Length: 288
Image 1 (cartoon, rainbow, N blue to C red):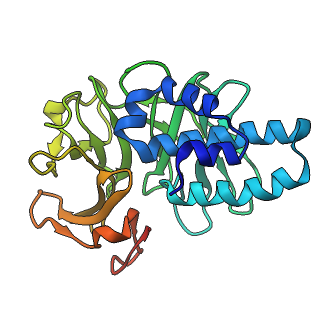
Image 2: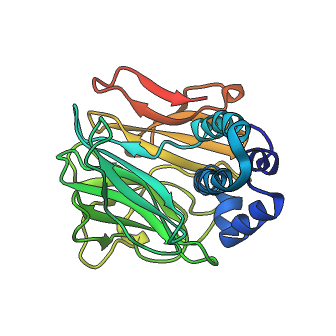
């Protein structure tokens, strides 16, 4: 991956622009580089479009788009769907409100619907419940070291509920096949001791705390990376996830839901990430 400043400079963002965006959520940028990269690339693309509309011209457009596509392709996927020809959920940057919001649309791009509206905040990585009735996502503020929490809402954006409680980062929600649980990546405010993949109930009127969650993975001793991007297998017996040693070194792992049977599936040299199961559970796709 190209250096972020070089990349964003190429698509219309100056070094000072990168620094400004990085400083708005420094702990997310340093601890979760791939998540931060997704948000920053989205912001940069919007800024680049505005700059081109004023003075950049045709050549800037021709050179900007391939670089943006390469960067987004290396970041975690931000779209998912409930079933065959179902609506697609995704997140996008809104320049007017300086926020990242969640949308849904038909597979052909029609009937676009904006589901969240949180100025100066980010709502990202939506995941459909198996019945297509609810969407889980992460959300937080850009400024300061405020907690990032898991939320659940109806498919039309109504009845938004904060699911997790407490300090730290809670993100990358993934529904279990029966719709009763979510696999998440979290540290409960104690990194790296509590960082890992956890399973939480998908509904709790009082909010889910660490005491109500079940731990699945633990970082190796002395590690400073992250376990993230979990996905339940179709039969609900295991989870695939990405273990990040750093923003430039990652591999796909599989583990049973009770935490046993941990196995690395890809070599570190592939820098694999963002795994997902095939519907029959026989194959796993990923980014590299």
